[in-house]
Image (cartoon, rainbow, N blue to C red; front, side):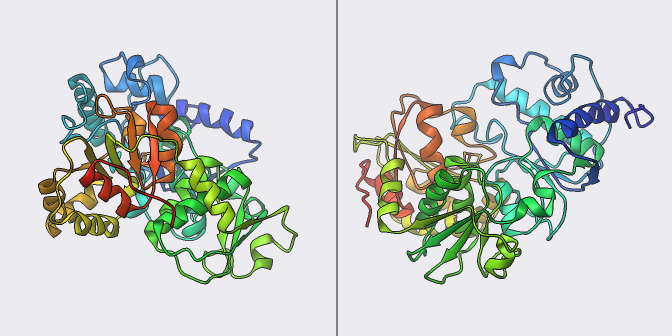
Length: 415
Ligand code: F3S
């Protein structure tokens, strides 16, 4: 590939990957057939001047001003969120130019074999690698799902590494592709029962702060089996306050049948305790708002599961969204199709809310005009929204968020 025998696109991709592998200290490449790409270009709208998709991809994802034509990407791939909801972009007040740019990229994806899933939760829409499968995923909240929950293997790739990896099907053998880096380093004694998404958000945020880039091993003193929605919250929260990419839950996740196996027979580097005091402090850290009058209720971070949409529809049944607030609910468009069929979308829309897909305000910074206070049930959104959107945030349960949508006021408190 490096010699150009397989064409210029693969050659350029391999030039990048050789540099990348050297920087990582990798001895060789391994094969992958599972890449979660990032092809939205939305963080740089002001820099996106080429009105030609091949030029755009060459510039941003192959790091060259030379126009490189990609024929077809053989590697199986899905895509992370992009800039707008292509059908409901007017709800987001997105500029027409951005819509046109996204439509151009959509056509590029169709031509080159990119599976445009446009979600931060590829595992909810059919990208479910098996244990041990080498992957290359972008999106910090999806990476721990791949590593810890599924037992597949990925590092946190960026837009600029994932695209060359997809073009070549080669990923540097480093980081979480290696057995020794997957072993637990920090032991977390969890002394509280965790039976809601809200509780798993708090735990993940606490542990991310304490363990940063390490590999936590959760020892749940009160036994319980978290579901998909709960683990989504744990992953997103821990990747926001820290950089958790891999963890173990004793007796539950694939590589943690026992403490000895999870730690590789070694002693933990640190032991953290999560009890009532830690829970309260984490909750306080996540709440930055002081005014009870809310402008936007933003839920669905990471993109809501069908279970969560079903719950929200039930909570909203017979209610009306208060005239002073907007209710934005995010999911993957594939899951919205199911919500449509099941009548959830109709309930949400009749109440005055919006079920939106393919993106989220944190990545586009497209909040409704004049938004100052946001309410959310996601620790990740509470973490990033103040810095990205310049807003203050209330963080609480889904029930509290829907109550806020109906009353226009935040009445949540830690129980
Ligand atoms: Fe997904 Fe946006 Fe949250 S990408 S994880 S909804 S910040």
